[in-house]
Image (cartoon, rainbow, N blue to C red):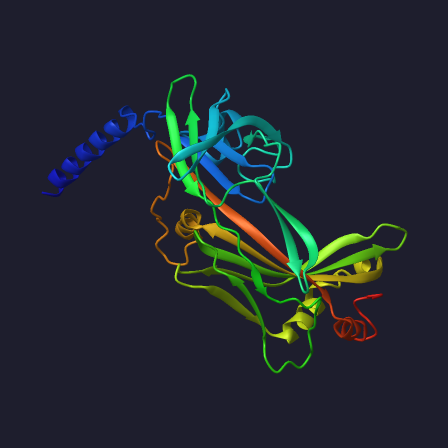
Length: 357
């Protein structure tokens, strides 16, 4: 009985080894031309860019192929244009040409040079808007290159195959940062009674905001006549909103300003800190970036997973391709640091920050 079992097992093992050696499994599917698009229009940016690549197949190390330009890029220019539509009418067409960037940060994909598509910049902006605060005091100018009332339709055509890819987006409308208000200075005290409130209007067509609070300063080293522009991030937060929300607010306790300065301004390396001769205080900036609804969904789908389930659904608004074509806008309000707060910084432990003013 035991001999029969051993004999049967041996035959099964030999058969399995035969098929394992003779069968050649193809781990990849037949190649398809899949176009990958990443484009974010910004009405305040004079230069609009669209990144267009192709998907690739690899039988070995997929990451190693990412570093090869011919795996990701088309070997010829594509026809790329964006049409502006308003109230059902085609207003104008913006054409895009290839250009090369030389400062792509190191990563899995080929760098530092990459080919992207850049629009042919219009001769004049769509709108010029003056920034007015206080008693009709003009403090700056904003240029808008796209109409936030229009819809923009992306068209991509492969001249070799005739394949067409398309997408469309609305523009995130302009909005205002309402707090801080008209005061020229912002003051942080070491024993606050209440937190500070920073607020902004909920922009039409936006579904997500990135809020950042920065403290800018300048640094002068021994042996140099040029100061270096530096900043630290005091607070940062991503916020999802509903269309019914009129205003978004965040709160910040003043004592966090002083603790963050202590942790981030002096260098942890004493030798590097000894090279700093003096520093100069600058402005405190409230920076709010608004993402159009489709872009908001895209970021939520592909944000890092915190659960054991790592599989993510696909999200794309590209017709006949993959990726995202959407819009965003950034608003900034800067305030000078109040003299009393500057003095508080200078008086901390014999001015460990080396602030001259």
